[in-house]
Image 1 (cartoon, rainbow, N blue to C red):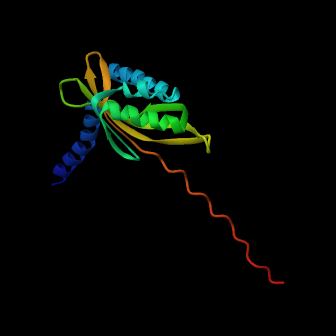
Image 2: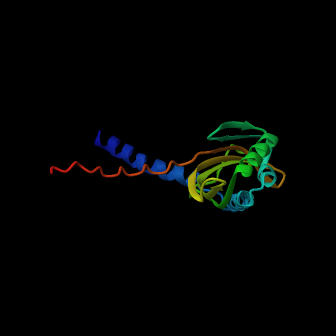
Image 3: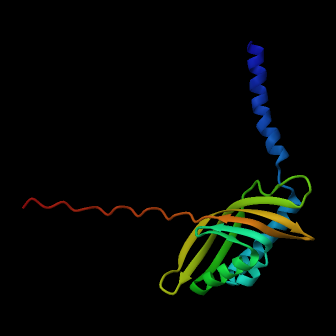
Length: 171
């Protein structure tokens, strides 16, 4: 019985290592998508809705804090409206260390995730630093990768510390 338990324990330690090794990011794909993320950063930093929308497939879906937006044209309109109200700068996308991940075996779809940071300035506020997390599914169109699904969130700012209340004096 102890031998079976030891064998099970040995397998439990080996399986995560094997799984992690199998899911190692392809360095060429990682480099290609890192260059792609730089194009995204440039579009954000230039507040360029056309350039940003061009990174999406025709049938792409963007899911953000306002809900889903369907199709490249609607995504472009969404960003054009946003850029009229808010100026973005210092936008930086950082993929996590294990990204990207291939989807299926055809080699034409992948997903990646990570964090983003930016500085926002509106007519009546800012500059304000913001950050969040994202997941994107990419589809290869010829030699280019395009975003088919883009999901992101905003990490809430830490709650402000409660101000100390003064107690009435006993005079």
